[in-house]
Length: 44
Image 1: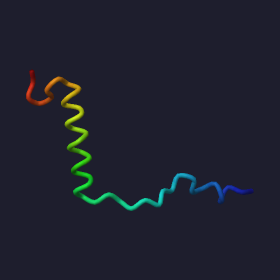
Image 2 (image 1 turned 90 degrees about the vertical axis):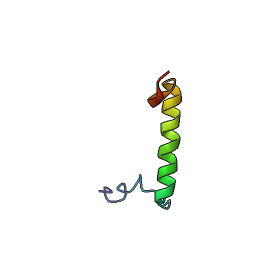
Image 3 (image 1 turned 120 degrees about the vertical axis):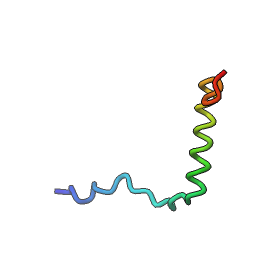
């Protein structure tokens, strides 16, 4: 039937993030996790 038309429902056409963008996102995530842990790797 129409199974070929319902194949690409989750394709996104956004450009891939560059390496520096990925680093910044990872650093921001790590800072957020450290704040949540009351100091993170430094302890408290």
